[in-house]
Length: 171
Image (cartoon, rainbow, N blue to C red; front, side):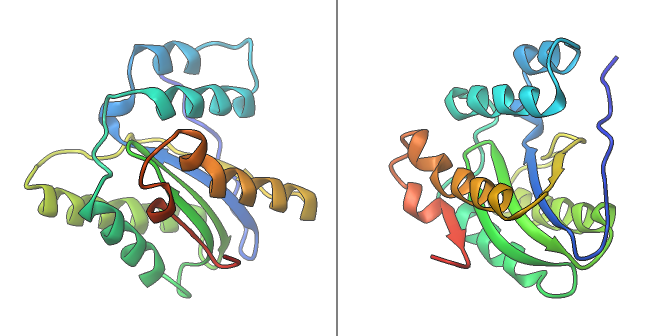
């Protein structure tokens, strides 16, 4: 049985969010999600490292990258303030400041992206894994660590188009 993550939502809160393509959720990730040995943050780090190397669910490339950048920016300022984003081939990292409830943000974000990406890739069906990871930013140090993690994620994964995959309001 797959566990659902608890999500914390509060307007004007900074959130680190990760969500992944449905096809990227393989046996390793399913086993890790059910493993109670690790905290949710530890699990997420292990999942991120796995996804950076995994070949499954890699739909977020080329023209889809620009579409994701444009769509995520279009939701400002109604839903959130976009601080930064990294678009990996099979998952997305965001740092935002909430202007709506997190559930509404994710519904609008994942739903809108799913429709547009499926259209551009001429595919049908569920694009995203139903769950997502979110972590409230505690302080300035946590904010900086998260921003830098997102900024360097594609570079650390040795993606040749790493510079195209990142947007940050401070860069």
